Length: 128
Image (cartoon, rainbow, N blue to C red):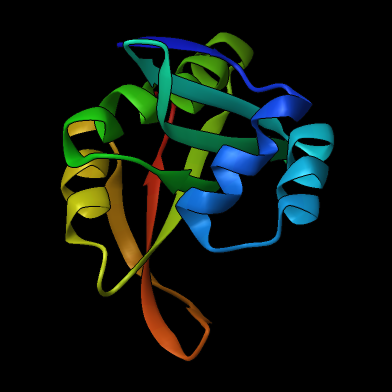
């Protein structure tokens, strides 16, 4: 599996993965840092993140359980290089993401905001 920067042409595939409109994912590619995970030339997953207030915020992550830790290494690496913390919010029904976050070095630090009515847990990596 290989990582690369997302490009606008990836929006259709990212939309398929998230059940969101392609225009929304096209905007995501323009407004955030988005890295895609490819397996044999096909997009298998992606992670998007941005940085504000000395924290790198993972805004979206999708992919197979086996690739989630690799995807999380991207925002963590950026945070490390910039001397920032990293955070992500995981819905209660996201055990694969939660396991990957813990394996990547995040710690559960409490509940996060509700997302589409579902409870979430906030994960943070200080000085990753």
